[in-house]
Image 1: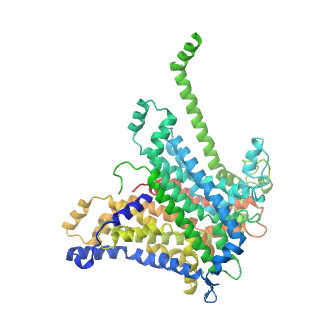
Image 2: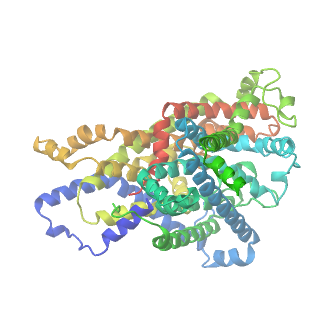
Image 3: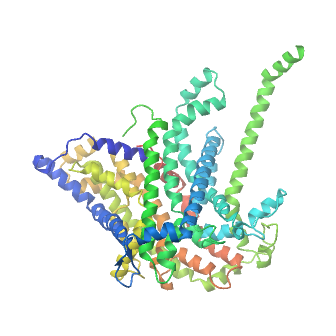
Length: 321
Length: 294
């Protein structure tokens, strides 16, 4: 999809704009039908993307509590954020930990599992199903279950640690381990990344490996010189999807800790959500400002990854549709 | 010298090659089993502990088989949580949203895939760009708008947006439509079929695989949605399963009643798992399509 985005961009470049009055009557008819078909989305994008996009930008310069009309305060929120809201920086740091940790976990573990399953294992379908299964479980239920998995006194994970002779960890009661607990929980969704990687691996022609073997490449050389270069488009896509998703982590944290202990798990979106929907009176203006900073952060990350992708993403010839 | 050649001979021998292959295969399967246990143990425990007596749940290290099977955990849980109403609400929202998603996304995808019109590529670029817009940016203005038109405490905020196309589903469906040979459409046109007929009677039947994938993604989306129901539905009679389960586990005094919490979780998870096992292939495809190049 990221590639589609790039292809779409380059398709736009250097093309002469088609003007309505230059179209033949037949082409005009075709264009009318096309626009008719996409009308639902045009309305949708105006109502559910453009309107909130512009409105939240404007609201971010106001004090707004839903009940009374918004009151203009200029840059106050943005100044407050960086000078007077220690939880803003803390939530940013917590989110950075989650993004870094969970993206690495998903990419590395997902890739490793896909490699394991790509070795002509028996019952491939079964393993794939088993690994994918936890990611279809509703997140509320997962949160309820994992609250017990990570229970400080008698949880599943502590039982595992005990079984291999390690001391129990107090997970959500310990500010040093609370965020790590969420990273461990994030392995639940590795199956999604794995399935995408596996499909990519299965698309690599066998001949490439045969040729590498004839040249005397061992397993690790084949992985480094054949598999990984050919998989860079898929890695690129997975990194992008997972980073955008991880920045917005919310539900499990809201349900399981609400930011505790001592704000050690207060993530960015939780902070934003609390201002809009938990605190009284609601601080929708400040919350909008937070949302815009998040948008800018995600945008910058995406832009940097897309811009550097040409250097490390390797496309096999001609596949740019 | 002699020793070296003996070792070498051993390393090259058929027997050694076979042993290494056997050992590495055994290790591979062992690793796969360990990983499966890691992924499935929490769900397995959820199911087992939902039948346990409460004092057994808190035993350390954890126990896996109920000492006595206690199905009354389920009936006890249901006393605090109106499963019937939340289930019906969730079904309603899920089904109507599914209809909206399929209807709008196939239409729009067809428009993008099969017609030439000014600004088409630019519009499609905007469509892809909306995928990057964080939900947090939309949250507040959309909430305020619903508040202004009196849609809080109704299902409309959860249902209506689905009738205006979802960028990701449109992308999936468009890719599929692009793959259908143009000859087929030309043939239909020569036979005098109208655009609407071509869409409903030629394209839609052909697009069934893509539609099934969209249906599954849409089902998952509505069934699992937490944030939407959380902010839009205050009236308990409108609660969905996700909110019902959340409210139940956060009831005062429910903090430690893990066996009932797990019973309630099992009730919410079961329908999803049934659908997953029925449509495994499509679930995997759904995940895959997001990874497709193109």
